[in-house]
Image (cartoon, rainbow, N blue to C red; front, side, top):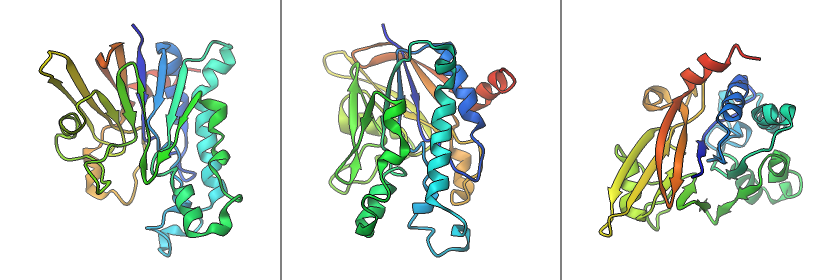
Length: 255
C-alpha cells in the first residue's frame, strides 16, 4: 500500500533562511514516500500582502525577493533526489492563499497582468500536478481516497473550517477523509460511517521555524512538522507525525 507525505505552510520568506528545506529534503529522500503532497503557502509573498501595505513593516519588501526565496526553497527541497539521480515520488502541490496573492494583485491592478504570474514560481519544474484555486477558494484533489486541499470551507461564506476540533469539524461537514493546512495547527480525527468505514481528518500544522510578527501569542498554538500517511487505502491510513524539531536534530548536521 502506498505512503503519502503531507507538507504544508512552509512560508519561504526572504527575511529568513531556508535551511529547513535542506533538512526536509533529506527526510523525504530517506522516507521514499510514493506521493508527496504540498498543501500550499510554500511562498509567503509578503510583498503582495494587502493588510500590511502602508505600514512601516512593509518597507523593503519586493516581489522579486519573494519569488527568489520560494524558488530557492523548492530547489533545496528536491536537491537530494536530483543529486542522487533517483526516481522522484509523485509530487502534487496546491495553490494556497499566499500564492493566490498573485492573482489578487492582478485583479486589483490589471496592468500587472503579464508582469507577475504563477509561472514565476516555476512550479511545473518541481511538481507533476498543480492544483489551482477554484474561484475564490482553494482547489482540491483526491489521492487514494483522501481529499487534499489548502483549506475547506464551512459554507457559502467561503470561510475556512476551523475551531478547536477542526479535524472533526471537517469530517462532519465533508463526510470523507480530508487533509488540510492553512491554520498552522495540528489535529487528527477519526469517525465511523454507518457502513463501518473509517474516515479520517487531518490538519497538518506548518513548516515555519521563525516568528511571524502578525501572529503574536497565537503562534504558541502552532505545530511545526510534517505527517507521513502510511499504508494508505481508500482514505484510511496509519499517521506518523514528524516534528520540525526532530527533523532538524536528525538532518541539520548531515551533508
